[in-house]
Length: 441
Image (cartoon, rainbow, N blue to C red; front, side, top):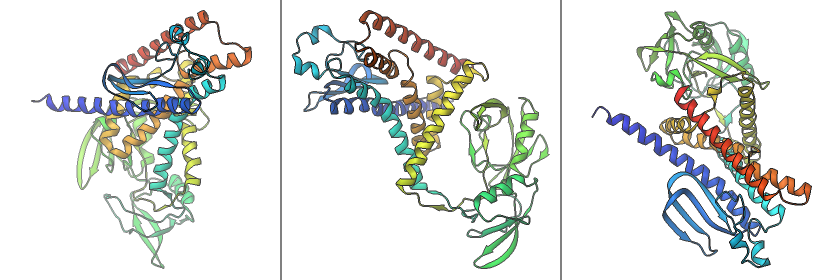
């Protein structure tokens, strides 16, 4: 009976992983399918999963849509393909096709149609991510550019601010807009009580409240010491190893000074005081210039003690912002891989299937919104991975197509088979290395 919760967590994690992977694979493979169809290439099979077929149906175009028993991937098999990877043509099938039918195969279609069909998989992953990020911006909006107090979060100590107050100054420093609010807050010395000049219903008042950026957990990072210790969003750190804390800026140096040794935290949660022991983890953080900084962290994310009122975001504004988020994920991922290869940061930053499954479960446990956000991040990662110029991946196929465009002929069949085998070995080695990270790091 004592093991039942552990089994429950395991099945929940596996279920979240399968759902996440199935959605990402469906998006990716549907990109191949629909663009191939638009380009006149016939898909014989659209499969979600591998192995024995559990469910299937044939549509009016002659494509068999199926769900297989092993839900860890999927594929689209086009007419004339020798296998699910479209690595080569089935000579026996191709020999019995006339010119019109060969045009409907992946290997008989024009170069532009083949390249577009291959590129569509990663492209649909990126488009899915952009749609999700833009949807979040459209639903949630963006913080308005005025430091007006929205919903106030529970906090210990003095709290004289009210929802709707417009903050005009903090400790005598003017804050005409939100950017100035954060600049002043970041420069303030830690203190238990701050003085706020506010406009309340047209009346100028001076009130007191906590530090603008208190030691409150606005978020808990995944796979972090804080999450493992059971900390929750809204927890307020009162002390670290007995040293009182009044501002979030005090936490990083106190945690770093422990150099990986356990730290004792006293936290305030909904009126109660709790004692926790956390072991900071060595973490590589991306820097704005593209490099990385290694620090000891417990996984708390900072924020103010109140929500900012938001303004509506239209699609014209949301789409470029969402595309910018995709660009940030891609650039940080490439920078991270480069720094791992050069040895600047630990290779433990590369997660495998176990790490992705664990993250899937944690994000699903955080709520539907968090899980959908994670799907967008994972979709971007899958799209990027598939564009790597490794034979057997979409990027490898695009390299072969580029060679054909320049040379005027496809690569030699024997050389192509060797390269595909090398690509399969490289991909397998990468997966085993990532799996080793999951188990050993």
